[in-house]
Each structure stands twice: as structure tokens, then as C-alpha cells.
Image 1 (cartoon, rainbow, N blue to C red):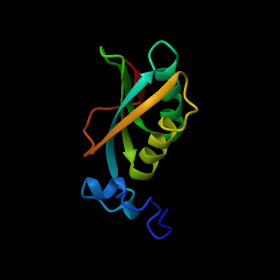
Image 2: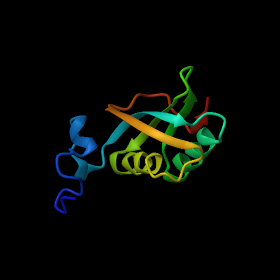
Image 3: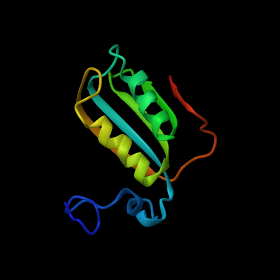
Image 4: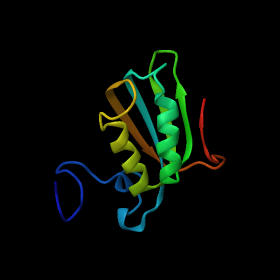
Length: 115
């Protein structure tokens, strides 16, 4: 871990991937596709609880292929904390893979819901 940047070597801070500076805490939209045994095990409910605790807005939605899509908007730091929780091994079910996409936030998301 690079102590100056607070990230692993070779990994850019999320804010830099969407043209923001991580020091500013600019808002981002995280879309994370979560694969594994994540449907029918309380994963969306758990994700909603963690997102609300962190103050993020968005949703967690079951996909037809068995994955869960998590869309969360908020500060870079907080969105990265949710991503770390999704990868922590402490979720309901069993997460095999989490694929994140960082983009600019979009208007219209209020609260955090299960879809």
C-alpha cells in the first residue's frame, strides 16, 4: 500500500478515474456487478443497510444472470468504503467477483433501495 496515496501500488484512486481529485472528496457514481451466491441470501438488504449507514444513495438490484448490480452515489472515500465491504468476505452468501465502474453521479437517486 502506498502510504502517500492511500491506495495499492498500480491502482489509481477512484476519483482520478472520473477526473476528480481524491483530496476534494468529489461525488462519484459506483456501479458494482457482484457475482457469486448473492441472490436469495439477503445480500441486497445487507448492501442497503451498509449504504444507508455510509450515507450513500442508490440501489441494489438482482440481475437475470444471478449477479447483483449495486449502484451507489456519494463521495469517493465513502463509495470506496462500500466497495471494500462488498469485497470483504463478510456479506451474506458468497461473493466470488466484484467488478466496479466509476462514473460521474447522475441526478435523481434519493435514499437507497432494493430493486
